[in-house]
Amino acid sequence: MTSLQQHMIVNAALQAIRPRSPFFEAAVKITFYHSSLCPRCYLARKVLLAILQGKQDIEIEEIDVLAHPLQTWSDGVRLFPALKIGDRILSGIFLDRKKILAFIRGKGDSIL
Image 1 (cartoon, rainbow, N blue to C red):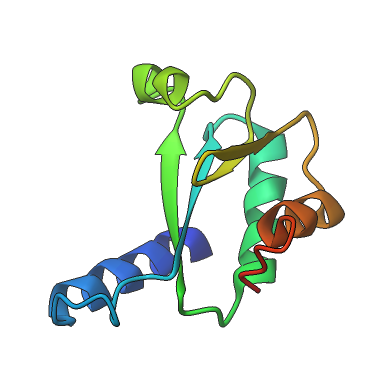
Image 2 (image 1 turned 120 degrees about the horizontal axis):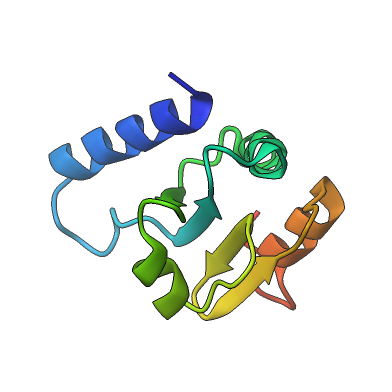
């Protein structure tokens, strides 16, 4: 089981036991589009998990583009790996730590 899968299981368990209140909802949701066959996606996931380690208020949703191509396309993702926060999308051949951090921090929308 990967670290991302463990993180997602913990998030799901916390969501199930938390009372439904705006104070307990995740502050930010990051959607990570990837393919299990893509080595660049593996590296992007590794960097993303390292950046978000210990950040309990950030939820990660993982979408496999091969298993969910219509959802990926309708979400505006054309290249993977890709990250989506709200309406903003970051995708590219190689997503390094600097690019991912800059995207997550946004312009004045710091969540880290």
